[in-house]
Length: 312
Image (cartoon, rainbow, N blue to C red; front, side, top):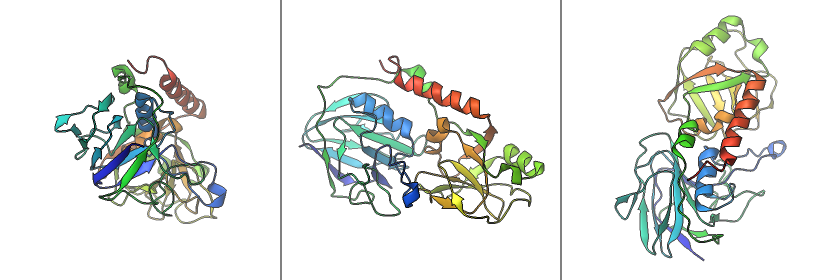
Protein backbone atom coordinates (compact mmCIF):
# COMPACT_ATOMS: atom_id res chain seq x y z
CA UNK A 1 0.00 0.00 0.00
CA UNK A 2 1.26 3.49 -0.87
CA UNK A 3 1.90 6.00 1.91
CA UNK A 4 2.56 9.68 2.56
CA UNK A 5 5.48 10.60 4.81
CA UNK A 6 5.05 13.86 6.73
CA UNK A 7 8.34 15.77 6.75
CA UNK A 8 6.73 18.97 8.04
CA UNK A 9 3.07 19.20 9.08
CA UNK A 10 2.42 22.89 8.49
CA UNK A 11 0.49 25.06 10.91
CA UNK A 12 -2.63 22.87 11.23
CA UNK A 13 -3.04 19.94 8.86
CA UNK A 14 -5.73 17.34 9.48
CA UNK A 15 -7.41 14.44 7.71
CA UNK A 16 -10.91 15.51 6.63
CA UNK A 17 -13.74 14.17 4.51
CA UNK A 18 -17.28 15.54 4.21
CA UNK A 19 -18.00 14.97 7.90
CA UNK A 20 -20.41 12.99 10.02
CA UNK A 21 -23.79 14.75 9.99
CA UNK A 22 -26.69 13.39 12.00
CA UNK A 23 -25.03 12.92 15.39
CA UNK A 24 -25.98 16.27 16.91
CA UNK A 25 -28.43 14.63 19.35
CA UNK A 26 -25.43 12.70 20.72
CA UNK A 27 -23.47 15.93 21.13
CA UNK A 28 -21.14 15.25 18.17
CA UNK A 29 -20.80 18.06 15.62
CA UNK A 30 -20.25 17.09 11.98
CA UNK A 31 -16.63 18.27 11.62
CA UNK A 32 -15.42 17.58 8.05
CA UNK A 33 -13.79 19.86 5.51
CA UNK A 34 -14.11 23.56 6.31
CA UNK A 35 -14.41 24.16 2.55
CA UNK A 36 -16.34 21.10 1.35
CA UNK A 37 -16.54 22.36 -2.25
CA UNK A 38 -12.74 22.47 -2.51
CA UNK A 39 -12.42 18.91 -1.18
CA UNK A 40 -15.11 17.64 -3.55
CA UNK A 41 -13.29 19.25 -6.48
CA UNK A 42 -9.98 17.72 -5.44
CA UNK A 43 -11.50 14.26 -5.23
CA UNK A 44 -13.10 14.65 -8.64
CA UNK A 45 -9.73 15.62 -10.12
CA UNK A 46 -8.02 12.43 -8.91
CA UNK A 47 -10.92 10.07 -9.67
CA UNK A 48 -12.16 9.50 -6.10
CA UNK A 49 -15.67 9.65 -4.78
CA UNK A 50 -16.43 13.18 -3.59
CA UNK A 51 -16.53 12.02 0.04
CA UNK A 52 -13.00 10.53 0.11
CA UNK A 53 -10.66 11.77 2.83
CA UNK A 54 -7.92 14.25 2.02
CA UNK A 55 -5.61 16.61 3.90
CA UNK A 56 -6.81 20.05 4.97
CA UNK A 57 -3.95 22.56 5.42
CA UNK A 58 -4.61 25.82 7.25
CA UNK A 59 -2.74 29.11 6.52
CA UNK A 60 0.64 27.36 6.21
CA UNK A 61 1.12 24.10 4.34
CA UNK A 62 3.32 21.11 5.01
CA UNK A 63 6.00 19.05 3.28
CA UNK A 64 5.12 15.52 2.18
CA UNK A 65 7.11 12.72 0.54
CA UNK A 66 5.48 10.01 -1.60
CA UNK A 67 7.82 6.96 -1.54
CA UNK A 68 5.80 4.99 -4.12
CA UNK A 69 4.52 7.99 -6.07
CA UNK A 70 0.88 9.06 -6.24
CA UNK A 71 -1.79 10.88 -8.22
CA UNK A 72 -2.75 14.10 -6.45
CA UNK A 73 -4.42 17.47 -6.79
CA UNK A 74 -4.47 20.69 -4.78
CA UNK A 75 -7.65 22.74 -4.44
CA UNK A 76 -8.91 25.65 -2.38
CA UNK A 77 -6.48 28.41 -1.42
CA UNK A 78 -3.17 28.94 -3.21
CA UNK A 79 -0.35 27.88 -0.88
CA UNK A 80 2.47 28.41 -3.43
CA UNK A 81 3.06 24.65 -3.56
CA UNK A 82 6.07 23.10 -5.30
CA UNK A 83 6.84 19.59 -6.48
CA UNK A 84 10.60 18.99 -6.19
CA UNK A 85 11.04 22.75 -6.48
CA UNK A 86 8.77 23.24 -9.52
CA UNK A 87 5.48 25.15 -9.01
CA UNK A 88 2.34 23.02 -8.99
CA UNK A 89 -0.88 24.86 -9.85
CA UNK A 90 -4.21 24.71 -8.07
CA UNK A 91 -7.04 22.75 -9.70
CA UNK A 92 -5.14 20.21 -11.82
CA UNK A 93 -4.32 16.53 -11.32
CA UNK A 94 -0.66 15.47 -11.45
CA UNK A 95 1.16 12.14 -11.33
CA UNK A 96 4.14 11.86 -8.99
CA UNK A 97 7.13 9.61 -9.44
CA UNK A 98 8.43 7.63 -6.44
CA UNK A 99 10.18 9.73 -3.75
CA UNK A 100 8.97 13.06 -5.08
CA UNK A 101 8.36 15.78 -2.47
CA UNK A 102 5.45 18.20 -2.28
CA UNK A 103 6.09 21.38 -0.32
CA UNK A 104 3.31 23.88 0.40
CA UNK A 105 4.08 27.34 1.78
CA UNK A 106 2.08 30.17 3.29
CA UNK A 107 -1.28 31.07 1.85
CA UNK A 108 -1.52 33.56 -0.98
CA UNK A 109 -5.30 33.56 -0.92
CA UNK A 110 -7.87 32.13 1.46
CA UNK A 111 -7.35 30.06 4.58
CA UNK A 112 -7.29 26.41 3.53
CA UNK A 113 -5.71 24.26 0.83
CA UNK A 114 -6.73 20.64 0.23
CA UNK A 115 -4.46 17.80 -0.85
CA UNK A 116 -6.39 14.96 -2.48
CA UNK A 117 -4.74 11.70 -3.53
CA UNK A 118 -6.13 8.95 -5.74
CA UNK A 119 -7.46 6.29 -3.38
CA UNK A 120 -7.98 8.77 -0.54
CA UNK A 121 -6.35 8.86 2.89
CA UNK A 122 -6.95 5.50 4.55
CA UNK A 123 -7.73 5.90 8.27
CA UNK A 124 -10.05 4.11 10.69
CA UNK A 125 -13.50 5.74 10.46
CA UNK A 126 -15.26 7.08 13.55
CA UNK A 127 -19.07 7.22 13.33
CA UNK A 128 -18.78 6.54 9.63
CA UNK A 129 -16.35 9.36 8.83
CA UNK A 130 -12.59 9.83 8.49
CA UNK A 131 -12.78 13.46 9.61
CA UNK A 132 -10.64 14.68 12.49
CA UNK A 133 -12.64 16.22 15.35
CA UNK A 134 -9.93 18.18 17.14
CA UNK A 135 -11.91 19.18 20.24
CA UNK A 136 -12.76 15.59 21.15
CA UNK A 137 -9.58 14.00 19.76
CA UNK A 138 -11.55 11.55 17.63
CA UNK A 139 -11.34 10.48 13.98
CA UNK A 140 -8.70 11.25 11.40
CA UNK A 141 -5.11 10.29 12.21
CA UNK A 142 -5.05 9.55 15.95
CA UNK A 143 -7.64 12.29 16.50
CA UNK A 144 -5.13 15.12 16.05
CA UNK A 145 -3.34 17.40 13.65
CA UNK A 146 -0.42 15.85 11.77
CA UNK A 147 3.11 15.86 13.20
CA UNK A 148 6.55 15.45 11.67
CA UNK A 149 7.25 11.75 11.16
CA UNK A 150 3.65 10.66 10.69
CA UNK A 151 3.02 8.10 7.95
CA UNK A 152 -0.42 8.03 6.30
CA UNK A 153 -1.76 5.14 4.26
CA UNK A 154 -3.24 5.80 0.82
CA UNK A 155 -6.17 3.71 -0.38
CA UNK A 156 -6.27 1.88 -3.69
CA UNK A 157 -6.74 4.11 -6.73
CA UNK A 158 -9.66 3.28 -9.00
CA UNK A 159 -7.87 3.59 -12.32
CA UNK A 160 -4.86 4.91 -14.26
CA UNK A 161 -3.80 8.53 -14.25
CA UNK A 162 -5.97 10.91 -16.25
CA UNK A 163 -5.02 14.58 -16.38
CA UNK A 164 -7.97 16.74 -15.36
CA UNK A 165 -8.28 20.49 -14.89
CA UNK A 166 -11.14 22.45 -13.37
CA UNK A 167 -12.67 24.68 -16.05
CA UNK A 168 -11.82 28.36 -15.58
CA UNK A 169 -15.44 29.50 -15.70
CA UNK A 170 -16.39 26.95 -13.04
CA UNK A 171 -13.58 28.11 -10.76
CA UNK A 172 -14.74 31.67 -11.19
CA UNK A 173 -18.33 30.80 -10.25
CA UNK A 174 -17.15 28.88 -7.17
CA UNK A 175 -14.89 31.63 -5.84
CA UNK A 176 -15.28 32.27 -2.07
CA UNK A 177 -17.42 35.27 -1.14
CA UNK A 178 -16.81 38.04 1.39
CA UNK A 179 -20.49 39.05 1.35
CA UNK A 180 -22.19 36.12 3.07
CA UNK A 181 -25.81 35.47 2.22
CA UNK A 182 -28.05 34.61 5.16
CA UNK A 183 -31.62 33.60 5.92
CA UNK A 184 -33.46 34.73 9.08
CA UNK A 185 -32.46 33.00 12.31
CA UNK A 186 -34.91 31.44 14.77
CA UNK A 187 -34.71 34.49 17.08
CA UNK A 188 -34.72 37.14 14.35
CA UNK A 189 -37.98 38.63 15.72
CA UNK A 190 -36.29 39.33 19.07
CA UNK A 191 -34.02 41.92 17.45
CA UNK A 192 -35.33 45.47 17.03
CA UNK A 193 -35.26 47.13 13.62
CA UNK A 194 -32.26 49.25 14.64
CA UNK A 195 -30.25 46.10 15.39
CA UNK A 196 -31.20 44.49 12.08
CA UNK A 197 -30.22 47.61 10.17
CA UNK A 198 -26.82 47.66 11.86
CA UNK A 199 -26.29 43.93 11.34
CA UNK A 200 -26.74 44.22 7.58
CA UNK A 201 -24.97 47.58 7.34
CA UNK A 202 -21.89 46.73 9.40
CA UNK A 203 -18.58 45.46 8.07
CA UNK A 204 -17.12 42.84 10.41
CA UNK A 205 -13.56 41.61 10.78
CA UNK A 206 -12.71 37.96 11.49
CA UNK A 207 -11.03 37.80 14.90
CA UNK A 208 -7.73 36.05 15.63
CA UNK A 209 -9.55 33.77 18.11
CA UNK A 210 -11.57 32.13 15.32
CA UNK A 211 -11.18 28.39 14.75
CA UNK A 212 -13.04 25.36 13.39
CA UNK A 213 -15.58 25.70 16.19
CA UNK A 214 -16.65 29.23 15.39
CA UNK A 215 -15.73 32.45 13.60
CA UNK A 216 -15.71 35.36 16.05
CA UNK A 217 -16.36 38.72 14.43
CA UNK A 218 -15.19 42.18 15.47
CA UNK A 219 -17.01 45.41 14.65
CA UNK A 220 -19.63 47.82 15.94
CA UNK A 221 -21.78 46.02 18.55
CA UNK A 222 -25.49 45.75 17.97
CA UNK A 223 -27.69 47.88 20.23
CA UNK A 224 -29.28 46.30 23.27
CA UNK A 225 -32.39 44.27 22.61
CA UNK A 226 -31.93 40.52 22.41
CA UNK A 227 -28.50 40.45 24.02
CA UNK A 228 -27.77 37.93 26.71
CA UNK A 229 -28.49 34.26 27.16
CA UNK A 230 -31.72 32.44 26.42
CA UNK A 231 -32.96 28.91 26.98
CA UNK A 232 -30.38 26.58 25.45
CA UNK A 233 -31.49 24.87 22.24
CA UNK A 234 -30.02 23.02 19.29
CA UNK A 235 -27.95 25.02 16.81
CA UNK A 236 -27.11 24.52 13.14
CA UNK A 237 -24.01 24.86 11.02
CA UNK A 238 -23.65 28.48 9.91
CA UNK A 239 -25.88 29.90 12.64
CA UNK A 240 -25.00 33.52 13.52
CA UNK A 241 -25.25 33.98 17.27
CA UNK A 242 -25.15 37.39 18.95
CA UNK A 243 -23.17 37.45 22.20
CA UNK A 244 -24.00 39.60 25.24
CA UNK A 245 -21.38 42.04 23.89
CA UNK A 246 -23.52 42.52 20.76
CA UNK A 247 -21.05 40.84 18.38
CA UNK A 248 -21.68 37.88 16.05
CA UNK A 249 -20.18 34.39 16.16
CA UNK A 250 -20.69 32.14 13.11
CA UNK A 251 -20.93 28.52 14.23
CA UNK A 252 -18.57 26.35 12.20
CA UNK A 253 -17.83 22.69 11.48
CA UNK A 254 -16.77 21.74 15.04
CA UNK A 255 -19.52 23.82 16.64
CA UNK A 256 -21.16 23.03 19.93
CA UNK A 257 -24.44 21.28 19.21
CA UNK A 258 -26.50 23.45 21.58
CA UNK A 259 -26.29 27.13 22.46
CA UNK A 260 -27.91 29.80 24.57
CA UNK A 261 -27.28 32.95 22.52
CA UNK A 262 -30.00 34.27 20.19
CA UNK A 263 -29.47 33.48 16.52
CA UNK A 264 -30.11 36.46 14.28
CA UNK A 265 -29.41 34.69 10.97
CA UNK A 266 -27.98 31.56 9.32
CA UNK A 267 -25.43 31.46 6.51
CA UNK A 268 -26.95 29.69 3.50
CA UNK A 269 -25.65 26.27 2.47
CA UNK A 270 -24.25 27.58 -0.82
CA UNK A 271 -21.90 29.87 1.16
CA UNK A 272 -20.61 27.32 3.69
CA UNK A 273 -17.45 26.83 1.63
CA UNK A 274 -16.77 30.58 1.78
CA UNK A 275 -16.65 30.35 5.58
CA UNK A 276 -13.82 27.84 5.29
CA UNK A 277 -11.65 30.30 3.36
CA UNK A 278 -11.96 33.22 5.78
CA UNK A 279 -8.69 34.24 7.44
CA UNK A 280 -8.15 36.28 10.59
CA UNK A 281 -8.54 40.02 9.76
CA UNK A 282 -10.61 39.33 6.64
CA UNK A 283 -13.56 41.69 6.38
CA UNK A 284 -17.07 40.44 5.61
CA UNK A 285 -20.64 41.63 5.39
CA UNK A 286 -24.03 39.92 5.53
CA UNK A 287 -26.73 40.02 2.86
CA UNK A 288 -30.30 38.80 3.52
CA UNK A 289 -31.95 36.39 1.08
CA UNK A 290 -35.32 34.66 1.10
CA UNK A 291 -35.64 30.92 1.66
CA UNK A 292 -36.55 30.29 -1.99
CA UNK A 293 -33.46 32.17 -3.15
CA UNK A 294 -31.24 30.19 -0.75
CA UNK A 295 -32.57 26.90 -2.14
CA UNK A 296 -32.13 28.10 -5.72
CA UNK A 297 -28.50 29.11 -5.05
CA UNK A 298 -27.71 25.70 -3.56
CA UNK A 299 -29.34 23.92 -6.50
CA UNK A 300 -27.32 26.08 -8.90
CA UNK A 301 -24.10 25.19 -7.07
CA UNK A 302 -24.87 21.48 -7.00
CA UNK A 303 -25.81 21.50 -10.69
CA UNK A 304 -22.44 23.05 -11.52
CA UNK A 305 -20.56 20.53 -9.39
CA UNK A 306 -22.35 17.65 -11.15
CA UNK A 307 -21.88 19.08 -14.63
CA UNK A 308 -19.85 17.34 -17.33
CA UNK A 309 -18.39 20.78 -18.09
CA UNK A 310 -16.88 21.15 -14.64
CA UNK A 311 -13.54 19.77 -15.82
CA UNK A 312 -11.56 19.73 -19.03
